[in-house]
Image (tube, helix red, strand yellow):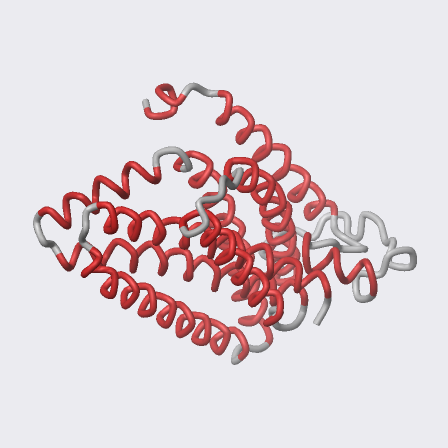
Length: 278
C-alpha cells in the first residue's frame, strides 16, 4: 500500500465524512432545539442504513471491476476514472456554493417535518445526505484504487473518517469555531488535483483502447529520474495521477482541466450570489 494511496484515501474520506457529519449534526441540533429528540434514534438508524448500503455498493463495484479482464477491464477503468473526475469536480463546486445556505435549508426542512410529524421525511433527509456522500466516496476510492494499481488504504479511510468525526464533534459538541470555509477550500484544491489525475488516467486507458488517438506518445519519459512505480513517483501517481511517460493528450487534458476548472472556480467565487442564482 503506497503512501499516496493512503493520503488520497484519507483526504477523500475526510472530506466526504465531514460533509455528511455536518448535515447530521445540523439535523440533531435542530431536533434538540425543537425538543424533538425522540426522533434522534430514527436519524441514527437512517445514518446506519445509508452507511451499510454505501459499503454494499462499494463491494459490488469492486467485485465488478475485479471480475473484468482485457478490453472490458480498460473500458470500465477508463469510464470509472472519467466519471469520478466529473463527480468530484461537481462536488467541489456544489459545496462551495452551498456552504452558507446548507444550514438554513436543512433547518427549514426539519422544522416542516417535525411540525407535521412526518417521520418519513425526518428519516429521508439524513439517509439521502449520508448515502450521497457514501456513494461518492465509493466511486472516488475505486478510481484511486484503479489509478494506484491496487486497493485503497484501510488505514487512510480510518484516519480520514476519524478526523472528520472529531472535527464534527468539536463543532456540535465542543462548541469550537472551526474555519470551515478555509478548510473546504484548501481540501477542494487538493481534490481538484486528484480529479485531474483521474481525468489523465481515464484518457490513458481510452487511448490504449484506440478510442482516443495516441498522438505523440510519450511526449517525455522521466521515469529514470522519478519512477512512477517506486518511491516519490508512486506516491504522486496514487495521489495526483503522476505519469513519468505521458502522451501529449494526457498532458493537455491534465493541464487544461486545471486551467479551466481553476479559472471557473475563481470566477464563481467572485460572482455575486444573486447573479449565480439567476
